[in-house]
Length: 349
Image 1: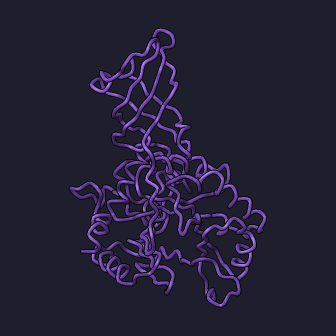
Image 2: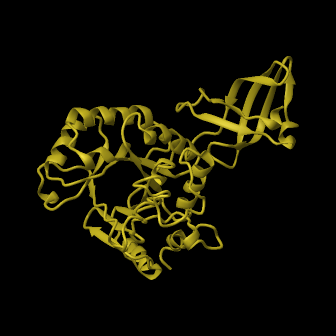
Image 3: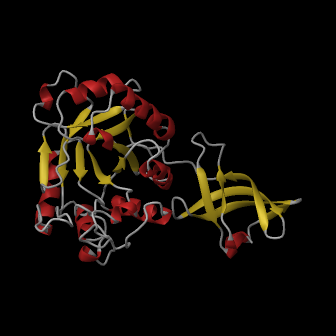
């Protein structure tokens, strides 16, 4: 029974109350020990949330002819490390499968992911994406977040859980600012929500103990910095979208960045260096930035040499705009990570 079912539950003995779901093979099941009408196990199990094999301890009791109830479940502690700047981070999207179907295109992409037209809720997929980014020496994912209750919000816990036992970190990319001017009260409510639900998780990105929030931008003025300064009563580390004249604003956030998807590289002196492998939307006849591996290699070398605090990859998997470095059929390699991550792995060599 145990070798064909998943043992799952929350480890309430740990501060972050982590959820674990594990399976045991028949060899591991042999380690089960009886304790009266209950059974206990302490040993290795296959982790279906974070991937790999982890040490666990649990106690169960049978229920009915083919069921059991988990009484106690303990898993490993988290990796509590946090990276320092300069940090390589990639913009990441959990928009799928919804975003495969847009503007009468299905799929809405010129390129086929090596994983197929996937579902961003798939926990094994999330594990593979984290593994791929770590292979590319990417230390954090900037996670596109469309607000409370959105499907990106509902999927975020799975991404944080998958990274819990790794040094990989996630930070929210606050998308609403790019499509309007949220009030300070609205922003404050969202920051409190992020703090309360996500920032306490071990895999959430923090700098100097403060949780990091990137903010997407549209046509901005210094008012964006004023609104976010007024709203940020929770002490978040805010990275705002840069615009002409941003250095002259009276209100200054913790940092700035520029989402330069159509440029092979762009330096925002003192703040960020962004690189993109190419830009070709499926609904556009000509690439705004053609893919070229030699250019990509040079961009990586320039980014590293810059030593800018934020070293940003645009993007890991924005498939509609054709900026993805995630493995694809068109750029697959023997290692399985694809040309663009291979070159990130070797720092442009």
